Image (cartoon, rainbow, N blue to C red; front, side, top):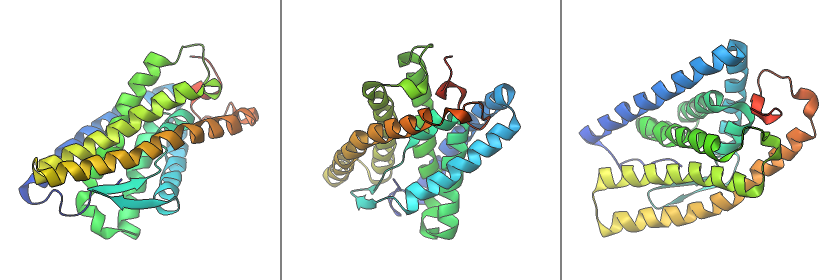
Length: 225
């Protein structure tokens, strides 16, 4: 998902700086909690891993323009389950920035909007995970229904933010609403595929429990809360 250049421009783009600052505050808050619980090295290693994976998602996984944005297979819930909220937030933001600097400089003016669209839904994902996954459940033991709930939460957040930026920048017009609807419909495929990817990654993690004490992994991956 990248907001297409020109969707929001001029003075209106200032709002993206404010929203990105809010996303940064959330990331820093999550990082502070992460460091207190798991240490600084865990945050650094996890963020480095999620940054590399985010670049893979953006550059190597299939992606195509649809309506007001692009459809990417961004496995936000996978990053959250494996590494935790803070590394996922930092990795998504850093991967997005590196992609802009190295591969897509035309996306840099939209960085505030794009980082908001990727990072803020993690807050909803974190809340839903806390409400729907029982404390005694390890992440490697999640069922498809639970993975689907997490994926739908994250992807719905992305679609909602894309819709907001489109309407904010272009106004409520038939063309804008049609483009947003087309984009949202295309993202239904991601919501179907991502839970399968989550479960595949979790199954692989379950088979590699010798790494369960690795500080760079989310503790809930192998241990109950």
